[in-house]
Length: 124
Image (cartoon, rainbow, N blue to C red; front, side, top):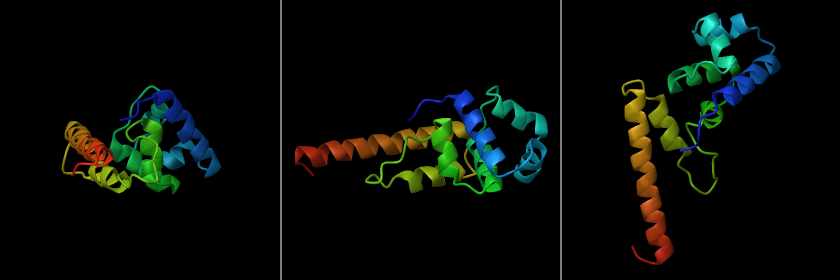
């Protein structure tokens, strides 16, 4: 998993909001979060959940995966890996909590690495 830099996420969100020509209040309303909470995210004081990032992405009309990468939840996508869809589905599932999502993603990634090492070593 990538490392989290909340300040960089906040700067990225602010830039996306300004590009969309939305005020802080407009984006907060569209995403269903409070104005003070969104302000704290933009200033790097709060770490939003995957669900909040998904709501913000929808309001900004950008992919949730983009915000997940910025937040450090996902690594930069590698076009050969094809795991972005699985990770996005896990992160978007409202029926499991954040700790469970991280555990699932870590298990999934460990299986992928294990199978990748086996394929590279010539065994099946």
